Length: 283
Image (cartoon, rainbow, N blue to C red):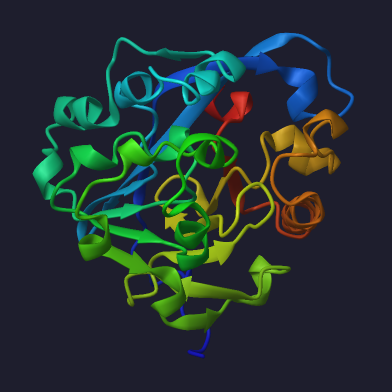
């Protein structure tokens, strides 16, 4: 294991820009125990990291392919359970183009996990390497029909040459995190330069990973994927409703929420960004 290396003051920060290409509508009370039973929008956030290695993406949103891949049974049930709408601003690829960033110059895409709202745009980036957990990939690889649906996975979103371009995070160097990021103690050095560190956030999905970085504006930041569905869940340590206990590994989900809660209490200077948090998008 390599020694502490990252998020020191000497490390050049990354410019982080949050994006969303769509949202689903669902009951707040399902996502947060004790919350009102009202319909809310849950944006599917992804992030552009402007890095010395070039533009890097953290997840890729829905894209229009979500609708193409959910036309037939049983994948169509995915649309019914989580009604999705896309924004007029277009896909992540189109939003990057509006910023003057061509899809061909994106050389790295970090995949937090393989739910459809995180991998919809993978096919739009033909030159990119994909960084993900091997455990996450093994959990979905080869699944079709109801087996894929139970994982919120749409196989058609995966590029045909995925295996030639994937880099598994378990193969990246393991590093110790500074005490200021406890209770997270270990991470994977994604690019080998100490700028992006991947941490385990199991529970919601097998092999889910988050990403520590230092943002120009926010300072130390954790992109927490679906480790929690909202900042309020982290602050108050409130899991989803028991009605969704069938989703993922409930014990691991609660353990991840506990770690995020402890990080928030002990190190409030660390910005934690859950993918679907309404507060994050409004800010």
